[in-house]
Length: 551
Image (cartoon, rainbow, N blue to C red):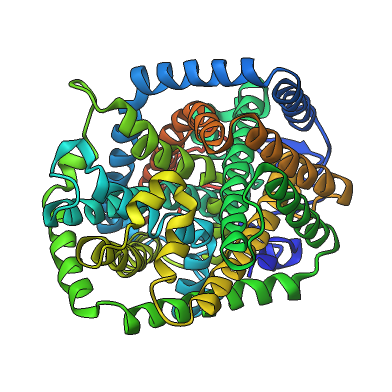
């Protein structure tokens, strides 16, 4: 599936306006040598190398600085994650029901490349990976033992409902709103306006020529860092999960040495894949992982407490809907900062850091769809799937702890990554299902990191859709090395702290690109209205495209 990202020919099957020409792209009136290794590449590489050196040579200092930065960022600006993500979600819903919802992501004559069922499957695979296994049980069972914001007594029926309610919040509409606004803006900019696939190019309506100067370069560098640290967090979580699974099955020690070996092995695989373009293997991994996930889901639904799960599902979804805006604006004026750092702020920061990567992917597979169809598909379907997954696996673990002395919450408290396997151990074929879970994590691990390597390389190659092999190797290796040094420096805590701190500047960029996107849509709508009334089109001050007509 991720192989669709790699081919410039696939990304731009047609030459006319509205597509991207890699040899020479006209953007804001200037010509650029797409693919050159300019200031964005060297600045990103240099700062990344300095960060790795800092983590290796002065890890105690790194931990002190990131912890202090985390406290300052979340204590001072944590509320901005809530406000920005909710505002983006409201903006997308408004956009879907507005006349702009009829606009196509591409020329007016373009039609979707993929069928709707295939498109849904590809969307789910994009971000469906490591987190489902890592958090599908761990988050609900953790909330059962320590209910969010003290809303219930621990290990009670009310705590069970709250546990799933907040899991839905962390993995539902807010996360997908971040991905959707990125995907929309990138698809519109690339396919309708013919710009390069760079985050800075999304700001042409606001900044004009300045996107090609220091301001635009800074935006692209921030996009690189957000993507890098989002990826390393996923790699670190994947290594911890695989290590726990191997320990459960084969007694392999759960320690940093094993985790480093796992990261090194997987990094080698996804880097080779990115360099050689072995698309069949990655496509097989992506499709195979989806099938295995469905098989594991059906197995748990059959052997688990299905009636209990169904009742808990509808009650927790109802509570989520009732408390939606309260959760969306839950501040820390009267405490709760530590809990928010561990869960809500971390999750939102993680989604923000993945925004550029997932946005590029969603744009690639959504050409020809209407804005309304895109928003509905990206927001609703994945959220329903995630809700159902968490209710089945998390609900099963909750049932075990409340009614069968499962003790899963205690195990998760000692090591969060053991929760999923501890749940599987209570059912038949535990060895087989645990092996499937490990394979799932590896598949998601490789395919997701492969695509991230491509996006990092593209963003540091001036938007080149087929980055050079040395650049792919460099970012593949640097991603793995960064994940290793952060794990060794402080484990999961270091990963969480770093992704939150690194994502804050990019949160500002996301808010800005939403404003820029709406400004461009509004200008195009007015231009089309003028044309319909026989008036001359309004001038496009950026000199890029214009109007809602083809191209």
